[in-house]
Structures are given as C-alpha cells and as structure tokens.
Length: 549
Image (cartoon, rainbow, N blue to C red; front, side, top):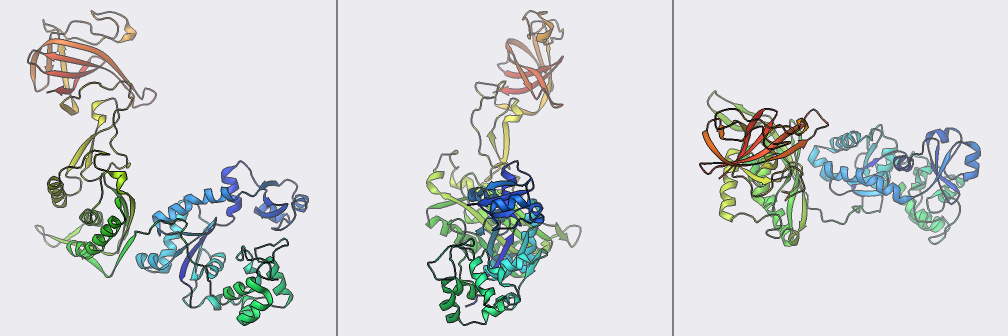
C-alpha cells in the first residue's frame, strides 16, 4: 500500500543551531559524542572536518574549533517553539522526526489552503516569519521520500502522488544514512557496532561494495534477497527504495485532535448560508468535547477566502457552545472586505469575497477546572440568551461587560470587554493587587471617563490651591496639603456646594521616568448636600475623578 502523503519541513544544521541558541559558542563549532564528530559548522567543514571523524583528528584539521558534547535535550527544547508555531499556524498534529525536522499529514492543510503547493508555501511563510528563512519543505508519499525532497528543495519540492520510487531511483545510496536509526548493522537484526552504529553507515558501505550504488538498483532486488543478505536493515532500506515507508505518523503530543475543517466546493458569499453550512459540524464538535468531560474556552479560527487568510483567537470567560462558535465565525467573516452595495439605500448581505474554507482549532480543558464561580458566576441563562441575541444583531463590541483591573487612576481600573469574551491579552479579571497610590475602601458609584473640571474656594470665594511637599509648610495643613481651608466646591455642570469635610492628600506618582509621567494628589471631599467626591489636583488645577452615590 502507498504510504500517506506527508509534508516535511527541515531546518538545516539544527544540531549546531541549537548549541548556538543556548550558549555563547561561536564558529567554528563541533558537536561530538563518544569521541567522534556528530555535526560541525560550515567553517569547520571547509577545513576538512566530517561527521564520524575522531575528535582528535578533527582538532588537528581545525585547531580553533570549539568542541561541545552532544545533548539531545537541548535540541528538543529549542525545537519545541518551532513545533508549537507549526501547530498554531499550519496544522494541529505534528510528528517530530528528529529535532530540526517535522512532518504533518498534508491532506488537511492542502484542503484548507487550496492545494499541496499552497500548504507548503504557508508552512514556509510561517517559518520565515520566525527567522528560519532557509527552511526547506518536501511533499511526497512517506517520510523518507519527503525528507529527500526537502534536502533537494529550493525551497519547496513536491513529488507527485505515486512518484516516490521514480524520484528516489537516481539518488546515491548514501541517502539512507541517518534514516536507519536504531536498526543496527547489515549482519542481522540484533547486530550492532562500528562507527556508524544504528544510522545506516555500515549498510551503505556494504551496498556500495556490492555495486548497488543507487536506490534504484537496491529497489531492483526482491524483498527476500534484501532481507536474507542484509537482515532487518536491508529489509527497511529496500522498502525506502521502493517508496514504501512503513513508519506511522505519531504526533509529538498524544492530545486528542479536536480540530475541524470545513471546505466548500464553491466560495460561499452569503452570511446566512455560511452559518447554515458550519453549524452542524460545530454542534457535533461541542457534543464530542462534552462527552469526554471537557469544555472549550479558547478557539483559533482560520478562514480562507478569495481575498486571503484571516486568523483570530477567540476566548470565552466560561465555555463556548455551538452557537457561540457560529457567532465567532460570522464576526470574523465580517472583518473581510465590506459588503457590496447595489443601491445607495440597500446593502446586499453578501460579501465581496467568498469563503472557501473554515478551520477551528479548539483548546479543551477539564470541566472541573472551570466550575461555576471559579472566575465569577455565569449570568442566568435567559440573560445570556438576550445578550447573545443583541450581539448577533448589533455586533460583538456593542455589548460590553465591566471588570476591575490593576491601576492607580480610577479610569485605568475599569476595563470594558465584549460580552462572552476575555480581554485581548487573554487575562481574566484581576482582584485586588498591591498598587501603591490606588484608591482604597468602597469604590465610587460614578467614575468619569474624562475628569470633570472643578474648583475649590474659601468661604469668601478665594481659590484654594494644593501645596507641593517640596515647597514646605505654607498653609494650614502643612506639607502636601492646601494653602487655605476649603469652603466651597464648584463642579462644572453641577453647581456650587458647601464643603463640610475633606481629607487628603494621597499622592499618585506614575511613570515619572517617562514622558507619560503622572504627578498629582488625590483628595476626598464631602459637601452639605450629602455628596462625596474624589478630586485630583495637579499644580493649581482641580478635576473631579469620581463621585460616591
């Protein structure tokens, strides 16, 4: 049977790069294990250093080279962010063939991006954005053929379906080296030894000795001939030469793949039609997640249209249901080019660009981790339905919910978030934090989005000014107080009221080292009409920041 179609990406010289990323070593650089060279940089290779060479001989050829012991953990940890980026941006299930080389089944990405070439270009684009501009991509039947294509790519090479044997036939037999890990020497399935232990080197030497110098010549043998003469290693090499790779694709994580891809034969231009087409798949997705005792509170949605690719990560303070996901798809589609207008009065509910595919990659968590009340109790179900309907009609940003966040100024501590979403940074509402200078005690009932100009006067109408601590005690209240006893409070638009009590100051010093520095004093004032105010003063100016009701 033909092996599955796969897409393989290879970052050259990963072993050397991983060492350079985690240490201060510079070229020339040699990575060695058990006294032999495993890898070397281009500069060391130019001076005659080769993999398999003894370290002493390598140092004679390149005396200035730094020798670093091989540490597989370093390579794996450095490659983990690359794998995570591929999962996030291209395909959710990644098989790590070895650090520096990753494989995904090409079927899903090809359907979503519109072909194998488009999927390979997307993978290259993602890695290029991460700084791996020299990464190469190969697409073929089986991992061995895909890796050989990636080694000879510039930077993308696609071997047609069923063409792996023909593509491999002219390759030198040394292409097997590195692909036979853990198999052993050609003497039999249990024999090992020599400098090429377990990587295919001994098998390649034996094949060359017998005149089998290309993979095509090896493929000309029968299965029995290859197995009886070269054992397990020969049997596997023969399968590779035939383009039959028996290795299964195993994602680096055993997580359940909950991703959903919905493709359309013809681009969908109607919003209502799109929602109708995606709803059954999303209902099934949420039901399947719930049956496993999980919930979905984060989902990444990719939408491919004739105008390009749209990606967005949506978060929910509780959990998504199927209608929530349908709404997120619809909202994201609204970010595509505007609807076309047939007349000056009428807007046709069709998008000028058609949707070709929708992909959802949910993040699932155990239901117990999101028990009711953990991050604030969920509103009553009827209220959720009302607010959701309002959002569907008015848009995702038309219905906002407040939350308290950290900050010193009251306007900073209020954060408005679209209902059913988390803030853009993904954080949940924070409780009380140690913010020096913040207002303590009961929160005011009214907080002004823009501070309202105010004025403090004495009983005879003279202005009262705050006294800066640096000026010394010049008023009745000493350093940092007021230069006269407050008698009247005048709030713009609220009239004049008699001051019966006041307290302060509480200094607020923020970002004093930048151009956005804040330097003011906060006061609390109670008037005869039983109103309590929070005022801030800077220099000789007063503003009302909030009011207690």
